[in-house]
Length: 122
Image (cartoon, rainbow, N blue to C red; front, side):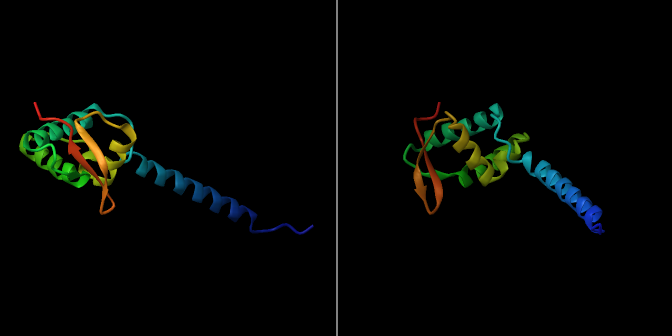
C-alpha cells in the first residue's frame, strides 16, 4: 500500500484554518453583540426626547443618532457603548430589539431606516 505523504500536512492546514476562523469570529463577536444594553436604550431615549422637543415630524436616520451620541459623549465626558459609535451596529441593535425609546420607524429612504419622534420630549 502506498500512503499519502500529504495527509499530515492537510490535517495541520485544516486545524490552522479552523483556529483562524475561531479567532476571526471572536474578534467580530464583541462589536456586534446584540444583547440588550440599558445604557444604549437610555441614550437613544434621550436623543428621542431632544428630537421630540424640537419636532415630531423631523425625519432622522441612525447616522444622525450616532453623530448626536458621539457629541453627547464628548460634552458630558461619558463613554458610550461601541454600538452607539457605529451606524451599522446601532441600526442592527434597534432593529433586533424594537427598543421602546420614543422613536418610530417610518420606513426607508435612500436605503436607510428613517425614524421620527413619537411624542414631545419631557
